[in-house]
Length: 152
Picture 1 (cartoon, one colour):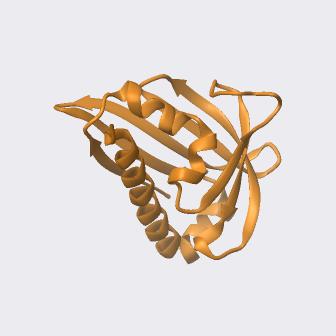
Picture 2: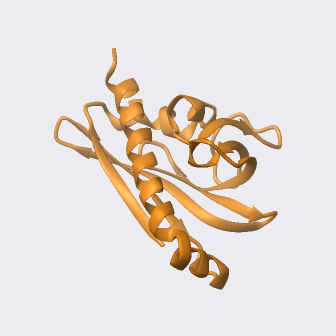
């Protein structure tokens, strides 16, 4: 109930960090989330900050808003957030890890589904297709971030 994708980017972590940690960039990079807004007066990332993302699942629907809470925020190294299935009930955690490597940075995006019985059942029945979609979408997102990070 988890997977990850790593893409090497010829850019320093400090250049990549604002691309992954400012959720208002989501519409530039993500395959399914086409808008995101800070909540509760927040204007940037920090542990405990909430935001909401506008999602078009599978690229065609359903379309919905989801609320997420940042649970890891270490500039230049890690950015992670948990997305609520129901208010206050996280279902999935998304994470970006930045590791300096050679001429740039290895950036890993990953997801992990919460270990609840109903999510395990969902993964058993549909996870094979959703997992494949998540991996494809993570690769698309990272390649778009790479293009932005490596450009001038």
